[in-house]
Image (cartoon, rainbow, N blue to C red):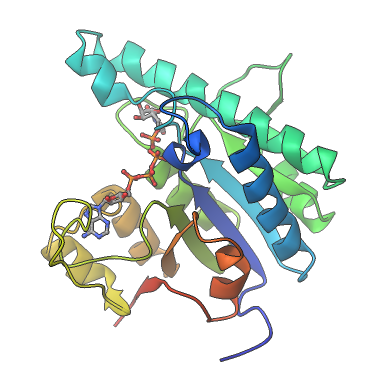
Length: 240
Ligand SMILES: Nc1ncnc2c1ncn2[C@@H]1O[C@H](COP(=O)(O)OP(=O)(O)OP(=O)(O)O)[C@@H](O)[C@H]1O
Ligand SMILES: O=c1ccn([C@@H]2O[C@H](COP(=O)(O)O)[C@@H](O)[C@H]2O)c(=O)[nH]1
């Protein structure tokens, strides 16, 4: 085990669903503040942090399709929901004196900056936390793929998926209580075994760019910093 963080620049894919906290829907300010405090603690370790936030707490395109919406419109709604979550995180971080910029994949210029890669890198070099909102900006994708894409563009050393479960299991642990957790596995194994913890397009993009993915529970206080030091509970997905 190491006391020092193992990565210099990371992208955190933050579960939208987690931001509900104990509520059934929407944004729980207590949960948002706790996550913001974890991000601040990691910044204070000297790690550059950028974020992609999901929107499972508000709206997922596929649920909209199930209710009769056109897929493209539903996905636009999902992407707009990620903007709301991004602004909530920015607000909480700035209340803790952490400089934060939200950059949207599509222009909403009266609300936040547009995504410009060089500008995002500059923000990070200045020590700001950068939140990438609106996913990839394209329908038919999810924020997992947006996270892998931005991690590659930002030259991140790792992609951390802070989610509902503490790692990757042989099957969905929420559905199968006999499922067993992996400590580590290759991108290829995730794809071959069709493990649903992350989209296949996100796994493929991370593999092509050799970015390790660490899956951990965002519900465990202090885990983000611990995982970066090689401690705590997580599964690492990387080249064999
Ligand atoms: N093999 C598996 N190992 C671990 N989790 C799995 C597996 N298969 C399915 N899952 C499920 O995948 C979920 C995480 O992925 P998902 O992207 O849907 O959630 P999320 O991170 O909360 O995203 P969102 O940001 O959309 O709210 C876990 O909550 C878990 O129940
Ligand atoms: O690049 C993207 C990213 C997301 N979407 C839509 O947003 C919702 C919310 O994202 P989750 O990853 O499911 O939390 C997603 O369901 C899509 O509808 C998108 O279209 N493109």
